[in-house]
Amino acid sequence: MEDKYIGSRKVMGVTEIELKTVAENPIVEVLFENGDKKIMSKKTFDIVATSEVSDETTVSNKKLDAIISGCLAVIEEFDADVMEWNKITIRLYDSLNENLNRATNLLWYKDDKRFVPGVDSLNNVSLLMVKKVINDRSKE
Image (cartoon, rainbow, N blue to C red; front, side, top):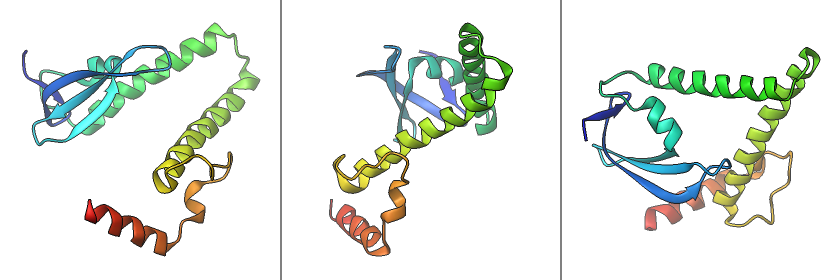
């Protein structure tokens, strides 16, 4: 395999994992030269991995261009009117935050019982809870 880079980071290996995207596309784990790992869709990897070193702005712009293109295709496919565009962006933003809040809740509390849709999971985290997490993780 020719050398591949994502931004300035050299890719040492790419492994498909069991998890799939919502569209049933493969997800890969990328191993970088410094030992860091990152998971991403295979589609994203194919877009951002290049044979030359670049910067993070270039990587981000490639991803954003593909995302915007895909979003526009869906909006066109469903024939969304101009007056619906703002609602689409607001609901998309809310949905993204809801998913992040749920994941944050699971990381902090290890279960889904405390998750409340529409409530930022970190709003109820205290400095003592932060200290406990740091202390627990440092023992691992």
